[in-house]
Length: 499
Image 1 (cartoon, rainbow, N blue to C red):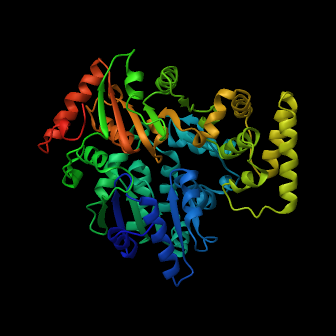
Image 2 (tube, helix red, strand yellow):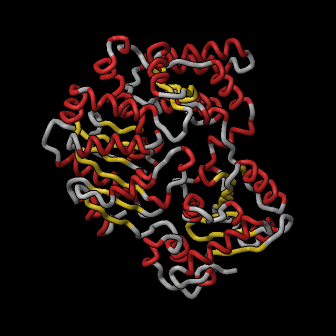
């Protein structure tokens, strides 16, 4: 891929920069190229931090970079503040009682900051607030960086730039912390995001923070609007959803790439399959897992095999050991997943000495041989975790056992091999499919969150979008509100949709 003129401009622009990147515009490609250039240009001892929301996203950035990144931080938001602020400097602010090993368990919920601090003191656990709109980890990091001069000096001496991905998903505490590093410590920041793709407001995401940065005087703001994923008609549809992108609309005579089907509970699957090319990959995206599973069954009954990709029991584990449970599951379920693959997924860099590889492989073989012996199975899981430096919990091992024992969950680890899948639109974020099927009732479009959700769902489609409208109130609301949105730019649904 050759960079566009806009991507080149972003890569070459110095200083604090905030980029609005619509779906399919090559956000990660641009960010990776910018990181590589600025690491090459750096002539000081300082390093960069590339900060993401998921380990998967961090791994993608790490894998794409061709420059030496051994001294640089590439990881998640939480791991950055835990490893670079909380663990090394908490004792500087709260005293010697906190010079201890700390682990994370976000399933442990507390009412307030004082209780969370006590949980660290008594159990060594970094937990979370019961209030989903508040973030204890970043609340604590903020207090430490403000009170510890050693922490501030350390960050200023180590980092010349931070690169923060998916900023629209940051909550208020995250935004406050990152802006403190920029405004008070003068550490340059590159931010990329898109408020239109904010689908996590239910758990505290605050897209207004991203929008506010666009007008900060110490930031230059740029926009990426060229969609390299979706066909022009799908781009037209998604661009008309928001005032900011309506000027990107390009008139088209042919509207066959988006189909709106008015159907019934009994007829929708057959009507959908009449519009799906079975030789191209497709995805049914629903709001709820139950609906996705039911939809897969209905489409399969009507003649085209759709595989429901469920959420696994281990997907809800939020401790620092979560990666290991997932890696063990992959080893036991996937034929070509090896001990080397497992070690490559460790959150920290590990050389993987021959002794380590041999020890880990031996324990994995023992785990596999004892699947029918729960006592031995649990014991070897604990032994492997301890060897690698991680703690386990009995209920989490239960979830791992359930995941590997129930073949219903196995498809979640090899979803790429299926041509036609059914998943939630939340799970589809970051993915793309030739054809996408959505239901109007999942997106009443009556509030900003619903419009954001719909935007994320439809922009997964590359060449075909099928919208199913059943006869219910939410689906009717979708149609009324969609027409209202499009009319704001003097367009009708018929301009971009084949009804």
